[in-house]
Length: 495
Image (cartoon, rainbow, N blue to C red):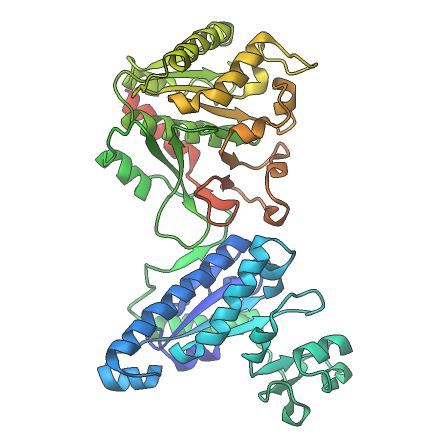
């Protein structure tokens, strides 16, 4: 609050990452100084923010080199241009470092990089935690943090935060009583003080004044993430991409954009279908409205990137009485020559035809430019599929064969299951998930079992995770579009 009170947004920017579910930082959401704000415990967003800071350090390094200076103050004096100081505040930062997996190692390396290089370029960090007992913080990181501030804590924490010979903070008793130390934790640098407390109502009053003091308003390039709402499809970047038809026919690869990133990135989230092993798409979760909108977006884009002779078979197995059944008829109206809507009773015949076509492609080893795409929604409702026993049904074997061999020959499957356990009832192959290199993990149905242990989600409305070869963080958080808007859009196109 004091930083924003004394400095303009042109002089000071805040990057705020809150792993207390947004309880501390949401109050600053409309403050013009705030460039990045996360109000959801998402490790991927935090890592992307640290990567973003690393890129800013590189950018400023080039500017300093070109100007022959080494500090922000010298740069302003030399060029007349102002680079705002950046204050990075990460509350409960230990969340980024938990576990022994790739994400925790990546988090430790990125924090260490900012601690080492950031100060020279006007980028500073405040790392806050309740305890360091299980935090895998690098020694080099701590050695680059000269200012230590400790409230009431245990003796073991005092030795880690300050120094092994400086446990004075463990003697603190009163609420808000603290020590600040600017000598890398040496005991002779301790300064005892009492925290000045501001309650929420006073902070809000200050915020109102500071917002009025900055008539230029909020920078539209900033990133605010709360992970609790669908993204508006109307006037979105994806709708603009679809309407301008910027895609071209590509027989080998197709990029299907379907969500906005739940991390810092200028690009939309996409899955890529390729002519190679396991290039299929799996959606798991009990979110039928999102499944319908996702399939509409992906099929539409896939048709735009496929030859006119390509064929799409859509098996919609939602109950006839379900409000989510039958929405693909709008696409079928648009592309009547390419799309076939398949009912449950005709599913077996379609699988037989697709198996015969695949066998022919394999036997002739021909390079076919056309695609064949089988879309199955709510797969556990398929009467002909049965994964019980060692052999399973004949139709299950056919589908497993298409999944295992089809994508190399331009035959892809987009499949949705409401429940993760439902896959075991449908397929005999207990590793069937491996046949899908693209997996969209939606809330519900125990879908989180598909995620790596360190990617366990805190699912919110409108949020999903993507596992794919293009994923940056193992399982990338995605912000889904408002399904009613997507469905309405394609309904209007179809009429």
